[in-house]
Every structure is written in C-alpha cells, then in structure tokens.
Length: 397
Image (cartoon, rainbow, N blue to C red; front, side, top):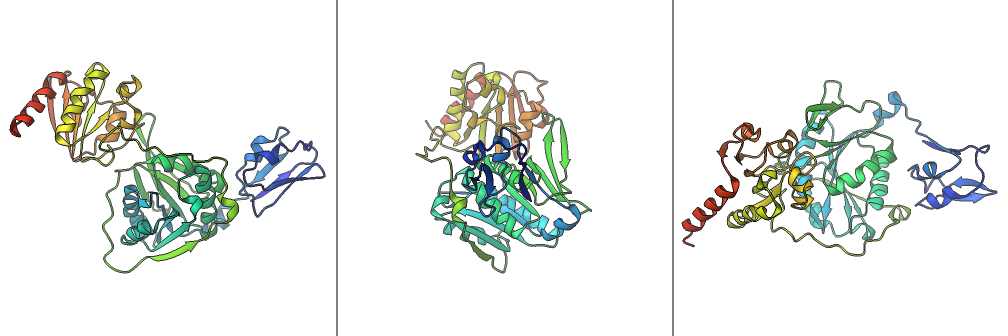
C-alpha cells in the first residue's frame, strides 16, 4: 500500500497537513512529505486535498496476499474492565468457524484495567488472547481504538475478524475496515464457512424482506459485526489454557482529536432490554405515550424490561434505547410480551427468537399472532390492568 503526490496538481496549500490526525505530513519546499512510520493510510488527506493531488494505491493482490492471513479473531469488547456478553457469544461461533478452517481462535482486547476481563475470556475455548493495554485506552475512544486495532491486525494478519454489532462495534469497526481496505458486513445474523473456504456472512436486507449472504473473496480480513443474542454463549473450555500475548501500542496510535469529559450512565431503566429475561414491549396500539404506564406497571411487578416498536419510538413516546427490531436491538428473552404491536417484519427480526412470545392485539389478523405462542385478541389497556390485579392478588397485596 502506497501514497503518492502528483506534483503537477499540488499547489502547496498545506491543507493535507492539518487533516492528518497522526502528524504524518509536513511541508518541504511547498510539497507534502509523508512519514510512513506514522501514516496509517486512513485517506483523510486524500479527502481534504482541494486539488486532488494525493492518491493511495491499495496494491492488493488476491492470489499472493491472502495466504498470509490465518486465524479467526474476536474483538473483546469491554467496559470498566468487564467483558461484554456478546464476546462470549462470538467465541462460540468463532470456535466453530476456526475448527472448520482448522485454525486458531483468538480474542483481541483493548483497555487499561482489563485483567479481570482477560481472565474470564481465558476460561472459554480460545487459543490466544492479544492484550493491548494502555491508560489512553481505559475509556473507549473510536479514533484510538480504530488506529490500535488496525495496527494489530496488520501485524498478525487474521483471516476473519468478528465484533459485536453494539454501539461500540458499530461506531469504529467500519473505520478499521476502511484502514485495511477490506470489506465489512454489518449486523450479521448468520455465519458459516463455505465449501470454498470463504466466510459466508448472512444479514437481513431490503427492510428484512430477504436474507443476503455476502462474501469477501479478494481482501482480508473478512470482517463482520454480529447482533447480540443471535448466537448462544459458548460453553467454557474443558482443558488447556489460552496463550496471552501482550501488545504494546505505539505512542502515535494513542492520539485522538476528541476528549472524553464525562460518562453518564443511562439510569432511566432498571433492566437493560438486551440482557433481560422478560420483556414487555408496547407499540402504536397503546394509543399515546401516557399509556406506556400500564406496560411499566406490569414490568415492575414481574421484574421485566420495557421495550417498544419502532412506531412508538418514532412517535416520540419512548426513547430509542427501548426499540426492538431490525433498526433497534435484537433480544432473546425467556418471555416476550408484545402489547399493541402489529408485528411488522422489521420488529419480528429483533424478537422472534424469544423462547416464549405472548401477543395482545385488537386485530385478530395481526402478523404478530403468526409467531406468538399465546395470543389474546383484545384491548391491551383492559387486559394488562387485569393481569396486574391478578398478580397483586396472588401476592396478597
């Protein structure tokens, strides 16, 4: 991979110097000169140049380069030193993919006080754990994480790189793919190794009306973000131990153009819908935002989380954090109660894998009844208060 300046086009304006977040460019005799030790080929200078004088040549060779890439990697997302649950789901599917490719499964984790997370990950069937530890990585910063992970991948060359389709994964994995000049399939719901050895990455497309299987035959690594709760958590290892590989990030990779002033946790809900065993979701059938009170009342009685359809969120009745569906969160609780939700295909994509589904809707022909284990045709505003009353009576309240 190389970067070039066309002298006939360059006017020596220096705009490229200011666009580089790594300090890899300086002007000499009115011509930009690149420090290739610092340059990560992000393309910011290419976009900034008003004269289109800078170009990057990816220089990929499908036949020669791909054989150097081996292994399946999982990005070990963590917060406050605790590994995210999606990591252990990815270890499960990653182990299968690695076995099918007859290769190693590794986890790469970035952070500072992450010994607890590393120890917990090591208890699962991974072969290696790449630990990138630095105080600058203590709090998630998309720019730092993007540069550090890009450099580690370039050095160790995994064939497959998986990450959770979480807020973190979605916000920076695309940048890693751009830096590496490779493909990324977002929000996957299925992964498998094909007969040709390529990673088959399946995800909903066209509003969830079809499932598209995407291949990345010419570049590496093959990258995918995977929705939480799609795959089961991996069982713990039965024998052996993971090899711990400590990686020291270069100082120039730890710079960032942003600064974290404070982190404020969302305390609006007692239970996160992604991790909840019981979810009660409200839709447009509730009629108005005030009627979410009956949903919350039942949720409080049985220790459930409150979810919502996209229609309710778009109407401003409830924050986006509660949205279940293709454009919201994928959930897999033991019990899902859909209240006043018609069951559009986009909503079903986010909750249809729930163990038990109960639907309450006035319309007996609503699509939600096609996936429900139990259905009640009626007014949710009449049914839910009766359920709450029964629960309280059973408790002697």
